[in-house]
Length: 357
Image (cartoon, rainbow, N blue to C red; front, side, top):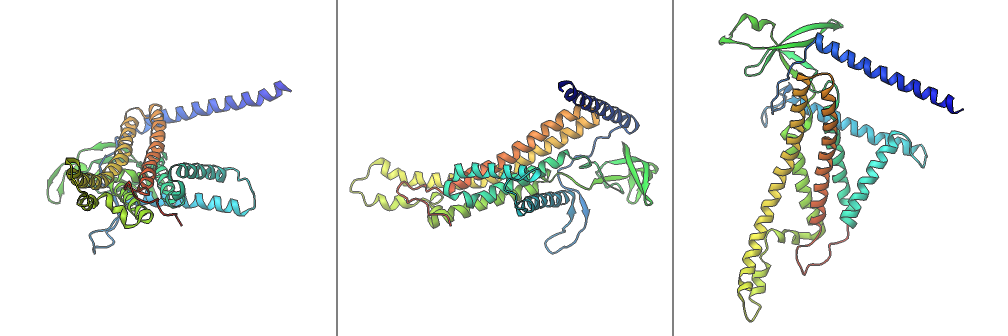
């Protein structure tokens, strides 16, 4: 009986071994047939469609917005899968909904241990940020992101490429980029003859976290909602940590004033200004930490993939998997800590925060 159980296991291992070798051989042949080309790296997102409106400036559909919409759809599908699984009447979820439930329960336990009675108010913001940033970051690992797009006339200052037609779908040709070429401009509307075969490339989907608009918007939401939760917990007295003038009144009620009593009100004002500057510094810190890590990871994958396209990039894909997870947790944890701190009074003689409703 023991030998019969080991035989299928050995067969499975042999099948996986040959499958891995087949994938490696296919990658080597593909790399020789179509040599990888270093993609164009730029900070601003590329426009796919538009402009749609000129009321507040030109509004475009960019490839980072498309990635954001895909991430939103994935999160909605995740929530619906759990919702449908719970409506079936099963007390214990199985499969993918069970994994999602475990992640959400783990995040709520973390928030509850940190924020206490304000956990239910803070949890939706922290969990949404963690899950959204996690899905957005891991989209960097999906094949086709930053590599499948549209070909168009080369723009000035952007690279141009030569292409080779692979096949066609319904009369629509599918092309692969073979090499980057230089386009020489001789004058307005006049170009070299080599430009006729050169095209520009814009990917359909680009990782949203490589767009500063996304990271800044997420940082603003985190910082603004921290102030909102602070006001809900402490009322107008929350702003006393920024504008600390209470010691001026207390100073004149004392019969004898020492040097420390005179300096304390001015020190409070100085500390309040530092607190105010720190709130704005959080926006910069949040924005550039996430943007810098994910943008650098994307560039790293571009470079490694263009130099050694077969095996080495897989190691860096695992690295980016961990970086995406860590950055999502860091963003969510910092938001949790700042919101939790905002519910506590900075006044030594202050009352306990009001009960969350």
